[in-house]
Amino acid sequence: MDTYLSALEPFLDHSGRLTALPAKNRKKLTALWYLSQKIEAGRKYTEAEINDLLDKNTTFHDPATLRRELYNKHLLDRTADCRFYWKEQENASFEDFVTKYI
Image (cartoon, rainbow, N blue to C red; front, side, top):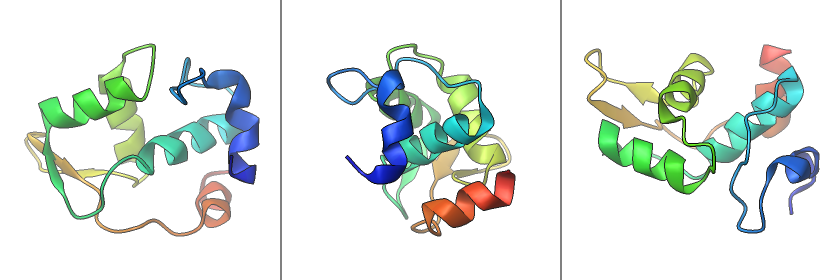
């Protein structure tokens, strides 16, 4: 497991799915980063497809909150009508991402 993910270990099940969205900011950012790494850069997803992807990688099944959080942290982009979602490119480093929001 990557070192930045060691803080997430208590929030991951045996299959690597998030069991909860952490409340503490750094751990929450780590969880969002972790989920963003599951999204293929450059591919457009429908809302249903992105929901399925998020549901497959979590056990608490709250794709609306996760989509909003990923969008707000610029890890996911979307059309104005929220019908399509995508990740523009591979993100900057994890540390740069966390530093931006802490």
